Length: 189
Image 1 (cartoon, rainbow, N blue to C red):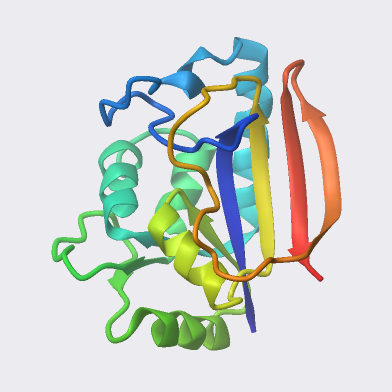
Image 2 (spheres, one colour; image 1 turned 30 degrees about the vertical axis):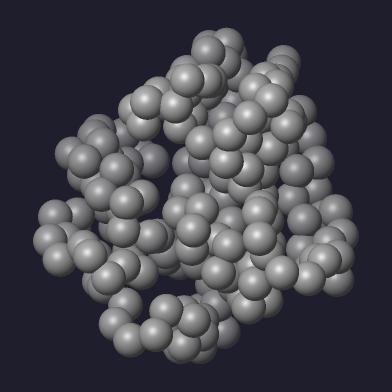
């Protein structure tokens, strides 16, 4: 049975919106401001995570964003992302240009439950914050991994909003990445 792992970058106040500045959010591009040494430590963490994953799960907009940037990028991390099966939860995406991609059909919660039953290993969810809300609301998340960046934006979409009832979590890992980033991992209790 697979386990769903949320993997996200967030500001200290939990904002995940527009980390690269592509969406027009007034505070967008915050992730691009992290120091070079911190970025290298983060890239190693992300590469290791991809090497340990069995599949990726994304919403439609996130899939299109990642496919446009990673489908032809060189390097071990990009190679691994190409190799991984990618599952897309979307009612609007029809074209799947990134190799090894499949659209999950039917009702999204049932489709994800079925995917968990068929995949052995970690199913990593990048970005896809609408999908994350649904997964959290239906108790389908097995682990949450956050890389916290040293910025406070004061506004913007946060990684968790409208998840229904309180979700109790336990810390399973925490460490510093580079000089300024913090990695934390939680699992539901």
